[in-house]
Image (cartoon, rainbow over all chains, first blue to last red):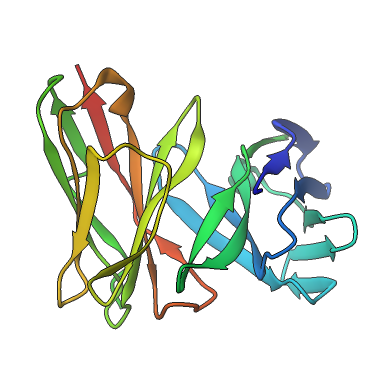
Length: 113
Length: 113
């Protein structure tokens, strides 16, 4: 079955690194994603990683994937107040000739001065 | 290049009515998926369309339906609205059936009173 879990809250100081964690259960995931949602807005795709990769870096963002443990993390370096938002991880599953995303509950990141 | 456009942004309906939401994907994208976001249930997959055909459907009652037109624009319809249908409805656009990146619109905020 598909189940994606995240911790609900994370608070960090501006300039520190943030690490948001996610665990998933479906081993048939092909891609794993991180999305950001600001208040009143839709979902912004931050980055994604193919399931046979261990790591992907994109500017301030680093994604680590431990496929054995089904654990995904997003590290944001030099966190800024503008990074305050809800972060969702999602697993992409190919099914029915298409694909669908199963989202985690979201982690609310609060960046304090 | 324009992003994913959802209309209307906000909608208030009365219980028992029906509603139609619209999504125009990114130009050239042929796959459209719909998601419902509520505080209690989080982000849940509704359905996915590609080339005017429904490819996948989530666990929602038959009151929820959708379609896709030849220009890839999609509509979703909810009949006999219930209070619990109040949610943010998000549409995602992909270039093809299995392309990696799903881009979301700003969503339609539906309130049922």
